[in-house]
Image (cartoon, rainbow, N blue to C red):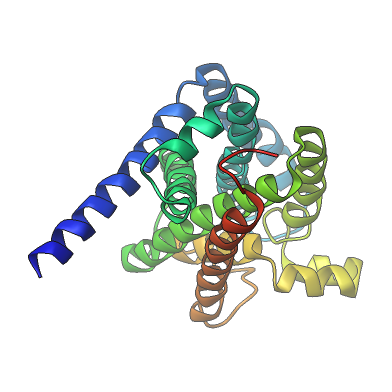
Length: 266
């Protein structure tokens, strides 16, 4: 029993080391962090205010601010894939694989670290959002906040998985641009689901099963913006996010074992 506890404690320490390293690494990009924060505030101050006067949607300004928080969380969580290429070019990747950490611990720790650092970064921006849109039910918001944690971890796991599979920074960059156009734009982050369905039924079908839609609508539900939600039961999008997180975490672990052979980046 004692040996088992020691082994579990040792595994946890290794996992936390990987998480801590990725969190520290992200905040070394000070210029990027500051620029993204400025972008977030300017989107609210300029685009949000102007668009809310152009669009005939009830309370669209608050609706857009909620979606903007999720878009920012997504873009911050996806960044860990670019870190992997940076490390591969400078030989850090081989160093990480030489550490007394299993590949499963490495990919799980990096997935958690990528999501956690994105959440830490977006935290102050979410506070700005809540100042603008307010909170009606604190209990609902706590559940929504937990789902955003899982969403951020899932996005990081997806980024790591794609980075390991593609192994080309140029192709990865292009793919991330395509995914951003599809995943973020074909969701309810910027517009209600009814408008997406009117534009094209296929777009509406994609948006219905989009994890960004789940996260955006859960955040709005938690903040009390229920005028244009795409679900009646919050449990359904929550389960969707849990499945998204579990799938990419599990897939990332499997692909690390299969594609990184011999302890190197090939």
